[in-house]
Length: 363
Image 1: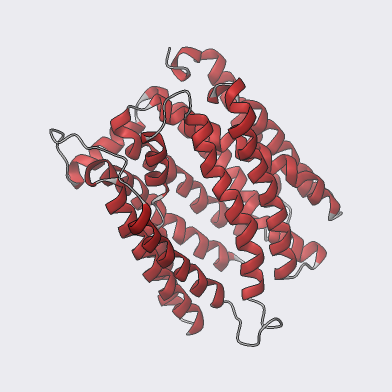
Image 2: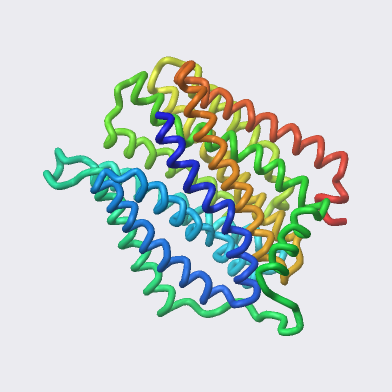
């Protein structure tokens, strides 16, 4: 279990290193060119991951997961492209589409992945098969992007660019006071969410003897509620509330129900808890994206979304490493710690919001 955590963490390390750089480069070279390059890179490195699994090579697997993580630090480009096409008033609604797509992906992906890894379904299926399918999906995405995507960003030709300048800009963006508070709060919340998301399958296996297919089905159930949370922002909440007004209560609800899921010894508590935990997390994530985008300048959208994903990668790096060790003490500890972190983030946000309201609302 510790090695699983290490493999998950090494992927996150690649994201952490490259996400801000990829986001910043998209502010200079354009969204389409950088995004296309990262998708082709993801195709290559995920294919090598499949080879690593197939050949039982830890070396190939570690290197390929690190590089695949680096290439996957491209979510800031998609977020920045949406910001390019949005006004401040419509940003919350449009950002929620990222959550909608993510929810659909999680509904489809885990069940298919569980089936592709099950040799009882087709004899030649194994743990490498989902990775081959992942690589092919990145190739399809790269081809579709090249065909359909139109550039959304017009760069400032007077602005100085280069790796050194971009790293300075990334550091400067993170140290903007009005951005630093929500970024760090989100880091805390997402770390708690990853504690839950990455290790509830372990709890299901050890406590209820779930199979990979059953875990895939339950992951799809969780993702349906994550999707519904994003749709709620799109069609209802974004019309009634500002992004900063949507963050506190969903964080509280999500943290409470993660703890509920971890502390009861009956599988149906997962079914009851998942809707509240997933919807709360989804609403908070979408709202935080819109808030951070509104607080950043238009020319820094790629940079700030890169910083945001880099911090999320820190969470994805910390959660599996720490969870892998503390789960040795008791299988429930990763989920319990995750729920506590999520509640802590919610109250940190509450007091920061009311005491520093002018900063967060950019008034």
